[in-house]
Amino acid sequence: MQILVDDLTGADVAELLGEHLRDMRTITPVEHAYALDLDELRRPEITFWTAYDDGVLLGCAALKQLSPTHGEVKSMRTSANRTRGGVASLLLDHLVGEARRRGYTKLSLETGTDEFFLPARRLYEKFGFTYCDAFGEYEPSPHNTFMTRDL
Image 1 (cartoon, helix red, strand yellow):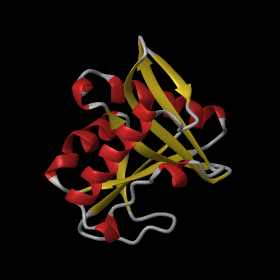
Image 2 (spheres, rainbow, N blue to C red; image 1 turned 90 degrees about the vertical axis):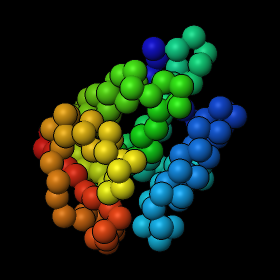
Image 3 (cartoon, rainbow, N blue to C red; image 1 turned 120 degrees about the vertical axis):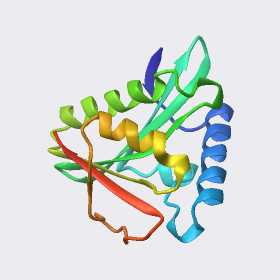
């Protein structure tokens, strides 16, 4: 598997992110669904990676710089035919390593509270993330949960 910085121009990436947005907006009320679209992921403070195996897209993840010492995990998604295969763990491990290389001392994230998000929350817990208050520009709601870890 290769994890590479992606320019967000591939049709397969657009399809995966489209699926991600549809799911997030179906499960979570729109005003509390913070998934980013292609244009939002192209902002300079965000780096986007994709994971491929033999030309097949396995998943994606992004890292947003909130401050010189604080990063945020964004757009974690595994292709439907690759869930439960370790792709998310490899991507998250990559993001944690990149955050450390950048000198971040904290890494945070927002995810949903619905049962659909339970595997994601368990993954983040396995990687040492703990629950915290809303951070950045997020507002607390019954639909969102926030996690963080020191690096």
